[in-house]
Image (tube, rainbow, N blue to C red):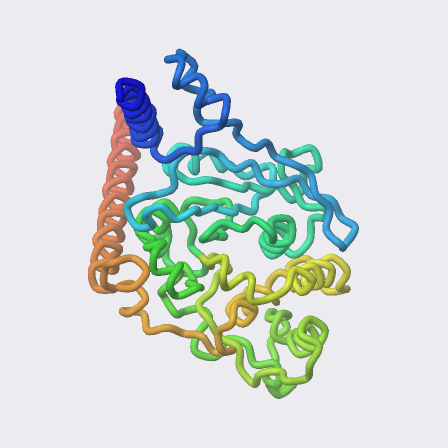
Length: 358
C-alpha cells in the first residue's frame, strides 16, 4: 500500500509539472531534452521551446531556386486574428525602405522579397512583373506549408494609388493591417484590402473594347484577352474584368490550395517569359488575382459592407477622418504660405530701408 501511495504521489507531481510547463510556455511543444531540463529544474528556459526551424532552400519545378522566407517567432496580431498563423508578404526594391514594418507592426511574421538584389535574404529569380513576381514566388516556394492567412502588400507604408493622399485605412498600410479582421479573411477566403471601388470598378478592363475606343495608356486591357487564354488555357475571356485596384489583398490557405502548385508555377513561368513588358505583365495580374482565388470576373463588393466586414468600421467614419486630415493639411499649407509671404515682405522692407539709409 505504501509503495502504491508513493507511485501516486510522484505521478501527481509529474502531472502537475506538465500542466505548469504548458501554461507557462503558452502551449509550446516540449522536446525530450526540455522535459529532462524541466524535471531536473534546469535553468535553460530557451531550450524548453525546442529548436526554431531555420530557413531552407527549395526549388520549384520551374527550375528556379528561391530562398524560403524567414518566419519570425513573434506572436501574430491577436486583436483581429486570434491564434491564426499569419504572414505578411512584401514586394520591394532594394532602394525602398521597409523599416516601418518592424517599427509599426512588430507582431507580424514577414516574408520580404527584394526583386532586384540577388544577394538579399529573400529574392526572386528575375525582376519582372512588379509585385506579382513576389506573390507567386512565395506561393510556389511555400505551397506545402502555407500559413492560415497571407497578406500580400507593396513596400510602402503610405500610398496614393491614383487618389488623394489621405491617412487612415484607405491610404496607410499600418492603419489597414492593424484594423484588418483576419478571422473574416479566414472565413471569406479572400479580401481585397481596398474598399474604395475607384479605380477598378465597375468595368475597368474590357478586353473586347472597340479599337477606336482603346487607350494606349492601358496596355493591360489591350493584352488581357491573349494573357487570359495563355494563363487559363481557355477562350472564355470575360467581357469585363473589374475589382478595386491595387494588388494588395489577404487570402486564406484553403483558398490558395484550391489551385494546384503546378498552376502557380505556370503563372510564374508565364510572368517571367511573356514578351509583355514588366509594367504590363504585372498589371495583368492586378486584375486577375480575384479570379485566381475563385471570385467572379467582376468583383466589386459594396463599400460599406467591405469596411464593416474587414475593418469593423463604416465608410462614413473612415472618410470623415480622411476629410478632417485633408482640411488640416490645407490649413497647414496655407499657414506655411502666409509665413513665407510674411518673411518675404519683411526681407523686402529691410532692403528698402537699406537703400533709403544709403
